[in-house]
Image 1 (cartoon, rainbow, N blue to C red):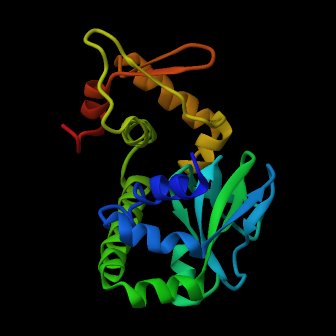
Image 2: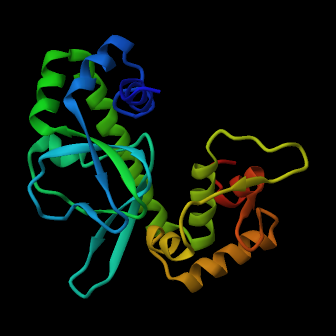
Length: 232
């Protein structure tokens, strides 16, 4: 697959670009530039001036905020087909979080001035921007609600349901789930300690919502939804 075809495929799956006509997506392609990062390398850091946004093509990127006392709150992982750094690129402000490559990462970078030219020249992209920002706001509100109001095993059940997406298990079987991260990373992402994650996993296992082997988790979406409650 050519880099152009790869970009078209990736962009058509993002919240911002999906639903656009192919010709509108293709018109954006020349403005993207490939950028690669090694494991542990920063794509950008909190407080620095934004110069563009990134589309992840391969790998996993952690978005996190570090406190003055050295603690870290990881609030999102971006993987293939996801955008990051778009808010600061839109408003011209500073980065609100650190973005760090958890694996070797390949991205396509779009400079903020090129981004502005694209949405100015193509009204359909401006319309998608509104929907995209509303979606981001809803996601943030949902995450804050989950952290503030729900016990850890419920938050974990909700996390697994999002990771499963639309996949359906074979009758009588659980769905295998490859998290793509360590238990420590999962704890950071959910704002918890590793012991709390272990305890929550145990509770989900007790009710039959998940099964565990040494290296994999197997999920029962229906029972996870019962634990979550909002999906019932």
